[in-house]
Image (tube, rainbow, N blue to C red):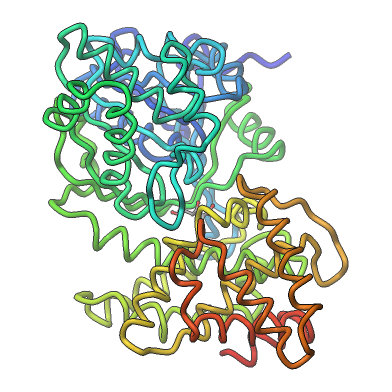
Length: 506
Ligand code: CS2
């Protein structure tokens, strides 16, 4: 059996593998991180590791929390929190390059579901100064269209009744902060790194809304003392598979059961408002600190995530397994390219055209990276939580100015068409979405309504029913222009398929 990657085997790694050069036995925890998935381990954890290495300030160790699954804890505990980040791309000669770094900033991993109280205790630990989050869009218990807390969410209802055993992200944060306040400890920064518009502002309003139901004085304390910087993170990090694990283990010479794989590109922009200090994340050109992250967020959600989701739905319908396969399909690429240039870029005011042009080109090159096997379903999942900030905001802006929304609406139609659960070759797949059951009902309601209408009205009827789904579309469903465009595209997708639809809309 191969030796495991851990404190003991660290000194024996090959010379071409970077590793922490500081004394890990002197690390102390300063950050509690909720949602220790690949995304976090490929950006914040790495930049924290590099910042500690460069500054010598070892007080920013990360205490990672997985909300439900024990897999990360079980894999990282025997590794003393160590894991490898592999950055992959195709080099100038077209051959895959892979650069490895073993990351040392994660001290320990806990599973909230097993022992929620231990997580609350950690938030209320005197040394904790930042509580950060990557819990994905669906981890906030909010309504996607409005950003408001969903009071009917079963986890939120549970947490209002069970202050000592919370299971929602918001419940865990509020009860953890309550404990801090009770103990007279200083405030902390709560930093969301998820792909949501105004992620910090939204987190703040969700936390305050829940806190208000718990204790008014606590709400005022959080409001006055804790900070919630908005942030934007951009790095493509597909889920790790067995092939990655084997390849990386082969290069390390010791077994890493839980590495992460990502692209070399990284852009992390954060508002510099930290209640109790922060690591020097700007080290080595890492993060950029700004006063207002909104323009960066808007740019990224619209010009990166919107097109990414579009490639995912159109590609999934064609039966493409990876995102790069979709990007390498000329008709899809031309369509998305036109959507970015003609419908998304004009909504991004204040950024020079040349900057947007460069940004678009770079994004298309990044996702064409075949060295990064990004499975289509990973991007396609949770569409109900992603579409509002990725595509629908842009559509709203364009409707307000009377501009064309044809291409953006085809992307939305592709999502709805994808929800039927079958691709153009007849291949079936499961819809992964927290609202999957409601969406399935919506789809059949739309079918029934379409069948009950006269043939000339059925496409319109279907689109009206689908667009009336408020949790995703909000008031947009009432726009005649949007419903009409949706009806046309859904009909084309049904009758003639993806290739015809994208060619007609490019
Ligand atoms: C992707 C993102 O999974 C998805 O929905 O669009 O994770 C994307 O890879 C990152 O946001 C890129 O920064």
